[in-house]
Image (cartoon, rainbow, N blue to C red; front, top):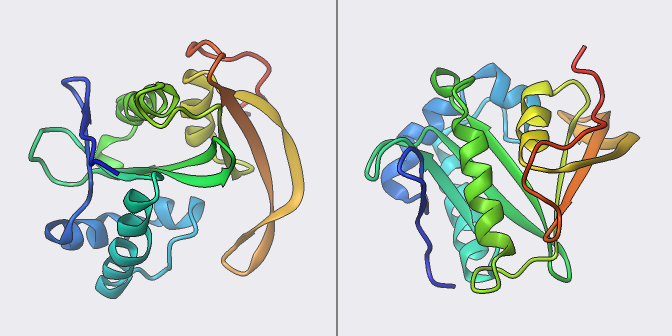
Length: 189
């Protein structure tokens, strides 16, 4: 797959490289990243190297890219957003963001860029993008909702987080869905 840098002038999405390893490790020390994702915890340099070798490289090779989220064209990594194949013309989106950049709309912008590219006929031409998160991950749910993902339900004990079964929220966006905030999400409580 041709490497696609995506930008809206505020956020830049580029393929993460070996030059980003130290920053990835630094970001993944954040307890909230570890709490809501399946990254190893504690997270070490070897984990970042494995991520680049076993997830990023094969992902780009098979049209399921993972991008580093940056706030400048050649800026440091501030987060990750990626797609994972889930069937014919379907991918799952996943993302995390460093603490200093949360609450500023950067991840919502990044997800918008990814969805626009993923649904475009000259992009990945996907029909459906799914999203899931451990119940209680309200920031992730807010990003999905703002980007037009429709809440599809709660699955009990469907995920594994740090060796324990967890309930998960599920949502999806179709190529034909508007990219506007979707109704009928659980109350953020």
